[in-house]
Image (cartoon, rainbow, N blue to C red; front, top):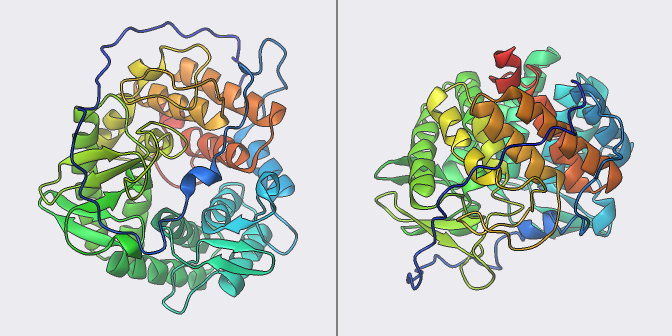
Length: 390
């Protein structure tokens, strides 16, 4: 990939869509609270960005290899070195996906073996957080479990390890049993078992992963994965019809309508597009369904307002601060690639990489690597929009 970080994106003026004030929030209780996913993506830099002097851009394979070298211990534990040296299930899943994407069977085996030994609960789901030698929060997070199941299925095929495929199918089956709900517009992925029950449901729009659902459906033959694709697509359409950008957290009603929330239980914080919601464009961009790709593309005009893109925006696209993150540029790259602008997308991938190098963080490094692997290659088995455009 060429280094196009000096390319300037034209600013596009779009109407800001405000979230209707005063909506009553009826929220399903979260026993013990949902895993704090905002802690996985802190303000990564207060600087305006990498500027004119940037490190050399890396290939997708180099990004992945460097993530594994820098953030994964020899025993397979993905360590959040910038956040107290703890480990979360999301990180283990990211490590597995990156290992598959770079063709590193040994590293994949190490990460999965550590995960099985330390995080797998009796029901087969993954405990969310581990620190100081033990699990300290055993509530699963469904995005991590889906990503891990997907990685297992892909690894089983890539490395001719049918036992990994079987483990991925089994993990996915428990996710379907324990962390999904059926709305009038289709099945949706709940953030964790704590959110199960009757409507309304707590919901994280960035957990929906159409490519993963399709791959797990193909591997398992379980029709509920196709139902998840349908329901997620319908709810995401509702999200992006109501607001210009998705919120980190939301609430889904039985009829599929969506209310943005400031947090998992709606009790505190600011409703915003931030470290969670940024992943939505990436997850939808790699889908093989053009309707999903079009949903990713809908974010592009709003995000193109900013040459220096903040990580935190309101749902109309107004800046809520100056924090920078590789995820912000990776998400815009996904939206631009989906919208048919590969040059601008490649420039943003390079910018994501540059920021990941200049301000190293676990979360930024993970998403700089995953974005490159998802958008510009076929190693993860989906429909990479930049690879398709060439």
